[in-house]
Amino acid sequence: MRTNPIAPIPEAAASAPPALQDAVAAPVRRHRRLWLALILGIFGLAAASLSAFRQAGAWLIVQDPLAPAHAIVVLSGSIPSRATEAARIYRQSFAAQVWVSPGLSPAPELQALGIAYVGESFYNQKVLMALGVPLNAIHVLETPAANTEEEVREIARECLRDDAHRVIIVTSKAHTRRVRFIWHRLVGKDPEGVVRYATDDPFDAAHWWRTTAGALSVVREFLGLANATLGFPSRPEPH
Image (cartoon, rainbow, N blue to C red; front, side):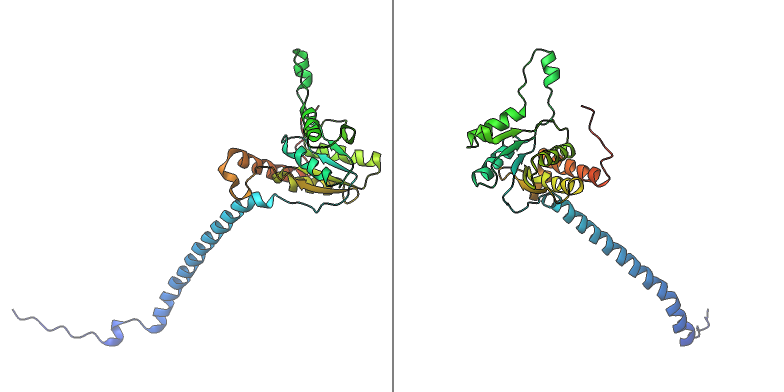
């Protein structure tokens, strides 16, 4: 059987006109660019988030230069590192007295059960005395505080009573930024609060997420900073 030869397709009919090709290819190129930008954006955001996560611990740590002051204040908690740092500063003659901020204690509940509780202020005084601070240079503040806000307010009242214009406040490393922020927010520049951290504090800012204590410290500080920024909407239990 004979077959008719197929006539060759003209070159003009074998391909679409250039204008049509461009019209079809342009959306494809735009979609590729959009997908590339989206992927790069996701990777960039992930990298920035990872960097911010890793730097969160270091960001919390701040410290002011030491200067002569009316008193050195030991904030409650983290026995004995804060008291140890306060004694170190005292021995450098930056202040003539050390104030001890008493935290809330379960003493009333324990006394009702016939159990004696001396409180952390007692141990902070013992640490200070063991490291060379005389007893007559130690002053325990009157009002126990439930949180940093209450401590700052009590220290400010004590400064007002003594006409003091500068105090050195000793706390833990991760707590320093929050202390400074709350001091500036509630007290301002006079009296001045010089914030220092305890050099013996074991907080590892570079690897804070590796330990439960480090992770809890960072989470607590960011929540505390958020609360202070919003005007302290979250309050401690009445005491």
